[in-house]
Image 1 (cartoon, rainbow, N blue to C red):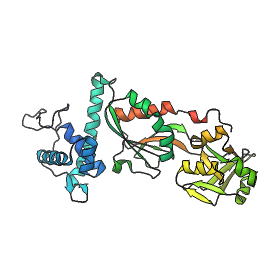
Image 2: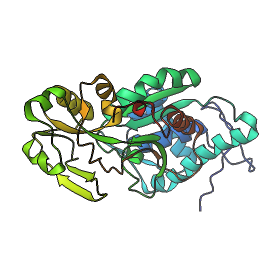
Image 3: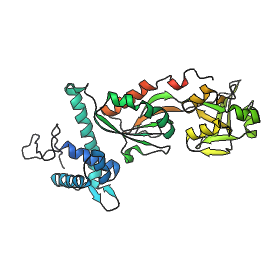
Image 4: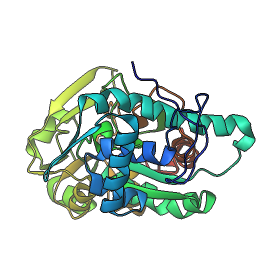
Length: 328
């Protein structure tokens, strides 16, 4: 059995430290960080860019780390970088050691120190552009030691494989290995432009949607309504236009192309301006959608992740700013 010995402070790559056994070489946390980043990004070059070093330096440092451990951690080819069996076995321990080091620094009284490093974030395109990115000047001013690496996409990304620290998602947690924190409600409303309603009239019940042009965001073509009597009606619409971007569908509805089911965070400005109006008010939409922050570990949160999630909860909260004063 290998015994991993770690000295609990960061040192320069060339330094040697010992923990208990004077003959035992100690792990450099820079090497641990590099290995974990290579594992998450499946690329030495990508990990090197992430850490601000050259690919050659990263490769040399990894080779030295493997020699020191006496184990090969990574398979290298011209096309891919994958973990060996030893690498796969070592990865969760390396991640735990890095997290434990952060917590140890907190326990030593540095809990008020500003978090640093790179925070990798995944978020849906429209929501990120409309509500996360505009608030980043405030977040960065609070935590100037953090560097942000954000991927905005409506595709469901793999947090672990992509090396992300945190993601924003609309749906409930599907994978029990992730931890979720609610950051805001995701209210939905049926809307159309005054010009469209002037040409085609306003439906008075969900059944009348068959006679109208419907616009759909992604796969959300099953619209569920609560009727005046409290009953629930599910209506699957056949879209004349389907776009995988909520902002684009909002633009199409505003331009009079049809009726759309929209999140209020996407259509709030148009609703306030009157370029979109809510319809079927007697049949409010039944939505189970919630905005969640998720992260791929049940262990104690890294400080950089915790401050970002806390900032989102503070910024959006149980009554998000986009819902205030809406004419619904």
